[in-house]
Image 1 (cartoon, one colour):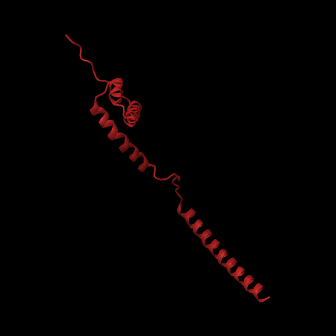
Image 2 (cartoon, helix red, strand yellow):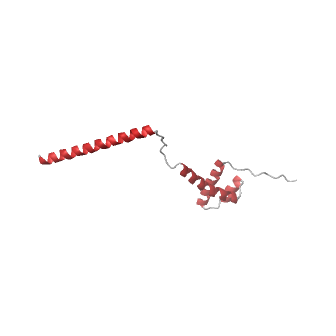
Image 3 (tube, one colour):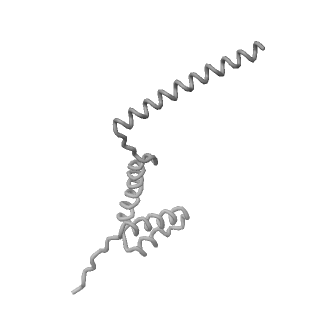
Length: 110
């Protein structure tokens, strides 16, 4: 009786390698995609599924990591302290701008 071989499932790393090899083979245009399939022991439908899954997985990863900035959680007290500091700095900038304007005006008069 003939022994049935159980198909092996490639790991995610192997699937990505298959994707890379098939993409390179297609870019070269020499029909070596069938060699990639034979070497890995997979069917063309498996490659189609891998080709569809890789970009979807990449997009999901990119969407999950939308920002490089770490999420900072501040307490209400910290937020209020930052708001007070911001208001104080804005007042200082306005005072300095008025002082600069007065100095310019005085220099023009002299």
